[in-house]
Image (cartoon, rainbow, N blue to C red; front, side):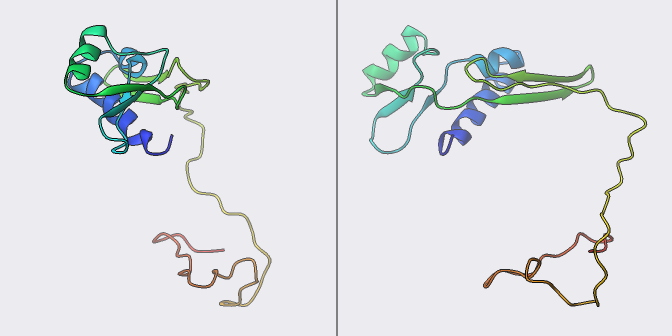
Length: 144
């Protein structure tokens, strides 16, 4: 996770969009991460290493590889004209699923009833913390 999240997302999206890999292959493809410091160091996972030719080219350019162990996984969803596809990274322990939409489900926001109190009066639990702006309701949705 951490600083690797943006790197992983970019590499998966690039594999899928630029190199036209199926989503499952784009998610499962080897990934590397460059942290800026130490310089010229690429972190890789031991169970999804780069192709030997790519690794040799990067080594020839002065990069060194460091085994970073397991560093996270990606869940991805693609929506197209043929429906939605959900993929879970085979490296990790996550699960990705597409659930059918329910026509009977009411999608309106629900608010629970709150105890009656005069307008503007707040309890200690709802008062903003010092230095924080008060919470605002989205337009058209009254606060309880």
